Amino acid sequence: MPSPARNVYASPGRAGGTLIRQVIRTFKQERVTLPLQGRVLIAVSGGVDSMALAHLLSRYGRKIVAPGQITLLHLDHGWRPESASEEPETVRQLSVSLNVGFLGQRLPAPKGKGLESRNLEEDARLKRQRVYRSLAGAGKPYSMVLTAHHRDDQAETVLFRFLRGELLELGGGILFQDGNSLRPFLQVSKSQIRAYAAEEGLDCHEDPTNADPRRFRAWARGRVFPLLEEHFPAVRDVLAKYPERLVARSGGGMLQSVKLGVELAIGRPLGRAQVEELRAQLSGVARRRALSLPGGVRLRPVKQGYLIENLDLRDQG
Image: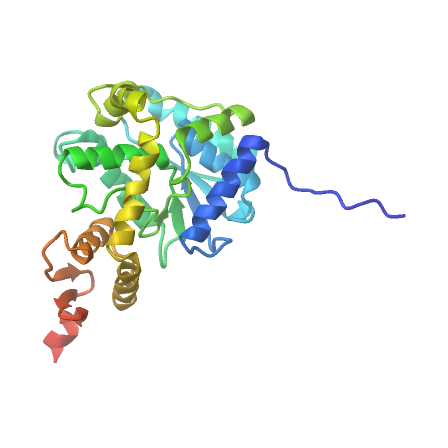
């Protein structure tokens, strides 16, 4: 009598099983077809969030993306001496243990004219996005980049935008998909990620700037949220869900329809700022005005919706 077939795939523990099911659920809710097609980059800093994402998808995420299609991307911001050696080596070792690809790049040092923003964190974000755009998309080596933004990041972003008076104008919070960047952990809590890392024994780096109260996220995480949770225990969940409610009230279906039509016209994904501006206009919290888009295209509001104009072709006529 033949022996029963043996499962050749690794099975996650309790924390990992919960986590991978939530990630798959998020992809399905966002109507992303699985498994992902093409070669995929996972941005990994060496911290617990991105290390957990890389490990989870490479080890247990075969329904999401084939391990042979994964490359771990480490970007060195040049903020600290140890970031140039220890962190990329940790990520490289993880890629070896998972049998996936590795790619490392050093970003321009954040000094003087090299700064793209007065805020170091924003400067780093802009430079990371430029690298993502250079590597992922139509005609590029990779189809998409996955980042480890999670539900606690979402709550902090919503609080930050509320305090600055930008919440409605900027669409609430972090998008699940921004161009060719996707955020599989956006409905996952930090505690879930830490539980998974502990279950798998992941060796991660802790960026000391994450505890610097001069930075908003560190201040909010270490001081503000603990005080709020004394009276409102579910405050992180409430804030993290706000963007979904805003989209529902502002006609998320119309946003997706207009966005898809524009992207087909210009042959590339809309940028984050353009999506947020469009969302704000559709929700009625921003003045309706024409949006200039790549490729000589303009999105002009009309009585019944929006008109996509190709200015280059019009000028030629």
